[in-house]
Length: 162
Image 1 (cartoon, helix red, strand yellow):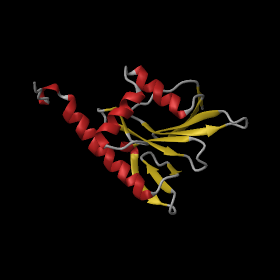
Image 2 (cartoon, rainbow, N blue to C red; image 1 turned 120 degrees about the vertical axis):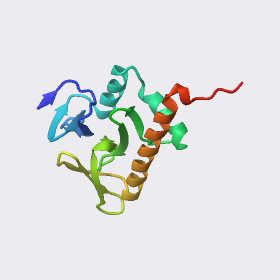
Image 3 (tube, rainbow, N blue to C red; image 1 turned 135 degrees about the horizontal axis):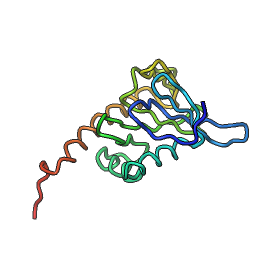
């Protein structure tokens, strides 16, 4: 199946770069038990999904960098309900991008020193160019990020000082 457009939703498991014979970047979307192509690169799908919801990927990145005290490749909050946190990864050839949804990861296993196999709910598996230990750290960061944003989003919990 081929789609022109796509927005991230609660069933989205992963969005992967896919290149045609001419080098044009598209996306392979894994949603539940389905896989389909979308005529946009993964980053464009993520950016458009944020904008559709009235937010900005760069703002989410900046907030995550501030909370996690890291400078690059940080997980980003997409939705507090149902807890969609996106983890950016590289494809095996490092040409493209993979966005994993943390809550859709069933298990991870090291393939070798540099590669990790990710098992997703829905039965799909994929390999990312990331050490297993690094991916595990990113998954822990997702939990911390989600809890921190949930805590800070409630204005009643905020204390203002003059």
